[in-house]
Image 1 (cartoon, rainbow, N blue to C red):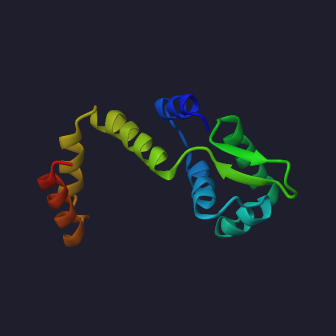
Image 2 (cartoon, rainbow, N blue to C red):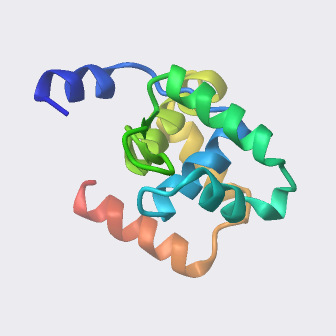
Length: 131
């Protein structure tokens, strides 16, 4: 991927449905999997081979996945990194739910009582480092 393509990919909003997140996690966890390998990886969800194929085609149309059709069977690879998708999703939640107020989002996460002591300490350490 050229620097221009990468810049365009990073700048555009990455929007994944819950189904697409599940498929993308399988692609990130596997090394250039075939359709059959992706189906096996998401078997716990109970999707048919046809459904997984449709999800992959939708992700391909969105520019999130590429298929190497020159190999038999074809191999799938993500065109976005897990980190890119996570950052984009975090920004989306930050703006949609918290109106862009990062402090409010962090305050909500901390005050919910769902952070473990280890997570709380990691957050304190991160804040002390300045990011």
